[in-house]
Length: 85
Image (cartoon, rainbow, N blue to C red; front, side, top):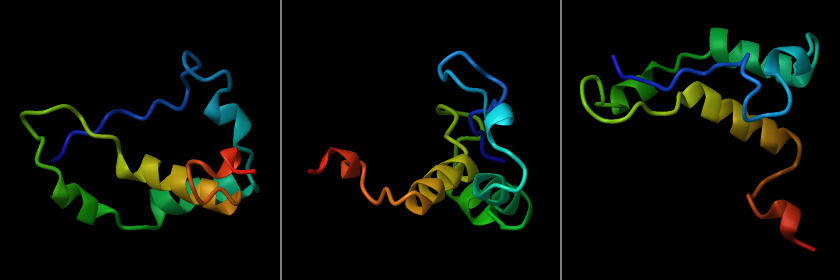
C-alpha cells in the first residue's frame, strides 16, 4: 500500500482558514469532495506509487484532484492565469 501524506483538514497552521468550517454542505466544493472521496475509484493511482517502505510520502492524489477541479470550476486554467493582463 503506498504511503501518502496525511491530509489534515483541521489544521490551521499554514492556512488562515480551516477547511471544515469553510466548505459548506450544498456548495460545489462540498459536492466535489464527497464525489472524489466516496464515488470515484482512485486505486489506479495507488498502483503507480512504490513508496511502501522507502521514499518520502506522496501527496494523496484525491487531494490534488480536488484542488485542480476546484480551480477549473473557478476559471483558473493556468497557474499564471491571475497574473495575465
